[in-house]
Image 1 (cartoon, rainbow over the protein chains, first blue to last red):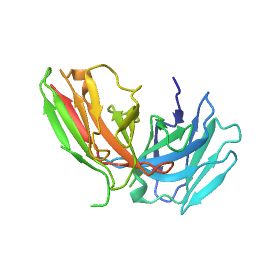
Image 2 (image 1 turned 45 degrees about the vertical axis):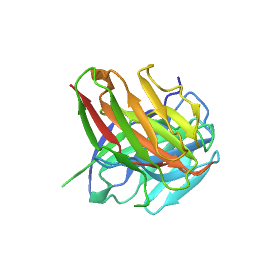
Image 3 (image 1 turned 120 degrees about the horizontal axis):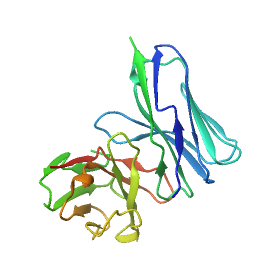
Image 4 (image 1 turned 60 degrees about the vertical axis):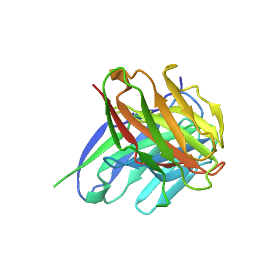
Length: 111
Length: 112
């Protein structure tokens, strides 16, 4: 089946550092999504990308839809304590379609 | 509230029991999705409704899993004869057609 390979699995960083995570697939997707999930909550959409090559920002977050349609990355600049959580890349063939999720990147911020 | 709500938030079942998990989507949302999230994993698709029609149930892992949305609003995911491997968080999401899916907080099912 379709799979997304997300890396790294976990990250330990100092507050203020920049963060980068990425996602690859052997399949082509038409929409790439990045979610954050806090403990005991459902995933919350951070950024949606609908066009190959698209670079989109949301505050300190920047994400890109790879030109091959098989990959995406998310950058977080100047991390703060509330950035702690699990970040999932996700993708769909169409907007109103089931979402395929990666396995997540667990972000830890060292005191 | 304005978001997707799910109940119960936590459910403990003995192996072999039947369970029913409820999802209240955002009012007016046409599409409703169920996902299963095992510990340490990303959510995995189970089934999809557009109004009351179940258009895709390809992700249901066995015939013990059954979902319904009889009036095109509230949905129930039923698991019969629960097994330990059914332990997971079950997430519901709803959306307007062709738009962002909003997720509920999930129901954490533990099968003993």
